[in-house]
Length: 229
Image (tube, rainbow, N blue to C red; front, top):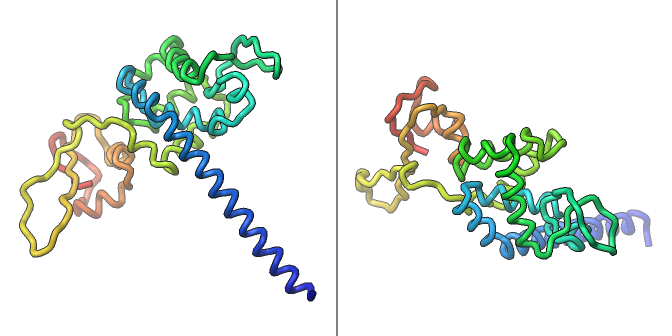
């Protein structure tokens, strides 16, 4: 067999293997989300931390439930502490169940001074502020940690699990009738402290897109101003 043919076969084989591995990893992530999202949503509604943050941190710290400490200690959040497991030697805390690990993560955030303030500072849908707040509060030493968490949330659209208050978004009901069906735009009412950057992040869009949709000539906003998203 000619070297060029062999090289092409190997090349396509590597592409096939790589694609299969990516699909396998994606399926594992989706299975993890499906199995644990109810716990995350329940904790969000009880304590006010975004469900997207809870899930993304668990997925990141436990390798979607497949790390050694996740398998042997039921530890999905990388929290250190005592354990009585004889199968592995680890400085990480052991739990009787994965649910206990989720509950302890919330307790960890609420019982530490630098982290407990996040519950009053950020709403349960501002996952980006929560990610950086948790990192700067001492939970993670890696400076890229928050960026990794946010990337996971966006990749798997975990933000769709977060609760956004109904009074935070006003829908434009009275629109000019057209001959074709058109989805009404979402209208956001500017509140005190809002900037285009904050609004863009909150609604998963860009400042440039908001400026274009609203034909804005300045980035200055007025309280009560209605912005198309």
